[in-house]
Length: 169
Picture 1 (cartoon, rainbow, N blue to C red):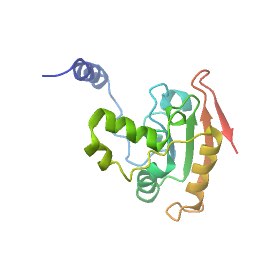
Picture 2 (cartoon, helix red, strand yellow):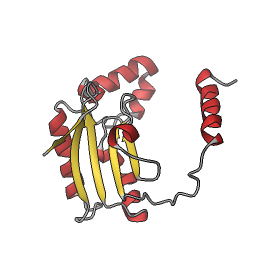
Picture 3 (spheres, rainbow, N blue to C red):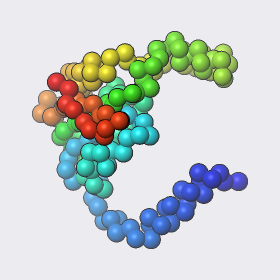
Picture 4 (spheres, helix red, strand yellow):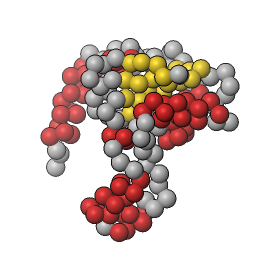
C-alpha cells in the first residue's frame, strides 16, 4: 500500500517527466563546484543559491557537516572534477539545540537500549555557535589531506528568515 507522500511523488514525477528535456546532461557538474548544506526543509539550494540542473553537486546532511560530507566531497572532486566548495549552514538550525547525550537519551527513550547501544560511538556533530561551526568546517576541509590545496573553500550562513546569505571569514 502506498502512502500519500508516495502517491504525490508519482504524480509530481509524471508531470515533471512529461516535459523533461535535460536527459543529455554530462555526469560532471558543468560549473565544477559543490555545495555542502543542511537537510533543513526550509532551504531550497537551487533557488536560494542560483543552481541550475547540472551546474553543481549539492550534498545535504544534518547541520551541513563537512565531516559527514567528506566521502561525497572526495567523490565529487576526485572522480567528477569539482574544484570549489561552498559550505552553507543556516540560522535557526536544529543542530544548535542539543548535544550528543541529549540525542542518545531521546533515541533510548523512543527506541530502547538496543538502539542507544547501536549509536554509542556516533557523534551527531551538534554545535553551539553557528559562525564558529562554519569556521571549524571550513578549517576541516582546508586541512584535510583528502581535499587538494587548489580547491577554493568558502563558508556561508543562510538566514532562513530573510533568504539571504552572508559569508563567514
